[in-house]
Image: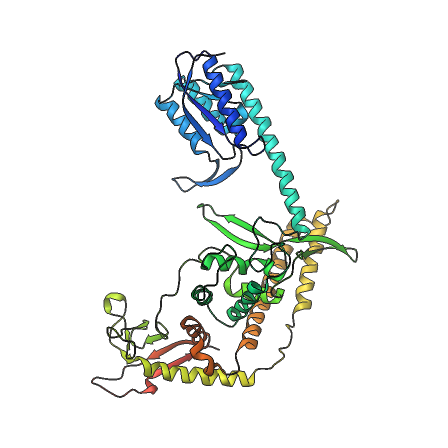
Length: 499
């Protein structure tokens, strides 16, 4: 064994839940000091990680490449101190505490070989060929053990998911501590929020209302957009089991989304894929959730930000000369009288058109109310069901049959036929799902309009009011009124309606 006479040593220890947690750290510390003293060295620095020595994370390199690396800050610091001579060597309880990753082990061996700094411990000696070979063999074995454990844990999680078992340490918002029964004080407002979003209310407006009313999350804190969007996108809200999916691209950016867990069952002699129904009460229907996802999207990226507009028609009004959005310029200290003005040249506009704010808003609102009243009168109370369900079922059944032909032994379909046919079928499925989502959104909005929106208008938030106007109008084009002070002329406002 390498002598450590007079060397100033670092002691590396790593937390392990499986081997006793904090007690294991204490044992590593005591045995490490005893080992150093036995061979004539002195521990002058302790390096401690509470990180896995096997689990890797995505790291973006300076050149933009994305790689998988084990991240252990104190392990990296110890190797840096060995290279710089801050410590003369290192003591470790055993190789399993030092590393389970061959790349990390080779980094440690490199330090020993190039800088002559010993890394040793009971059963560990990276200063000799035999010790290094033994360490590599142990690392391979430990890495395999970690992979086996990971595979078993993932399989257990998949089994729970396919059975619809609720998981997680925290109580999900909307449910009681049993994670199965609803908590009405949370579930009912969440249900109402979903229906308002389907009716065109922005998520930010709901968050603002809840925070103003002192309505808190399950953890007792104020609402943020990301918090509510995570709840809305989770299929748990409609009684289905979901899981998070991360999709990285070549630049290291990760797209995150929630997807419904499915399982394969045999029915009428065929193997079909069905969604997993959770062992809990739903807050909304599956149809409502699918319509909701069609509006808010299923990806979590890009949810930051808020609507800072303070006036009803900001950017809805458009200058007829330059096409730019018009914004409000109220006099100091009052909002009773204000003017919508085209942006200045320095801000991308022409600055040449302005219009009285209250009179413009009154005219636009009158037209919007009249259109909504007409649409409501023409709406059919019971909307006919979506007429392409049979077509979607046929496409999905054909996908299952094609996959079964591909996985059969012997194979019943040629590769060139399989991939071509499957691509066409998936394209048809996406088109049908998009059509169904569009139908569901339109249906939800048709059913959610209040009987007299004009009477309830003042009770809506500004964001809700703007959403209703934008639902019916592409824009309002403001035409020039000529020189000099002229009376307000509504004929100079061109309303561009949505179909």
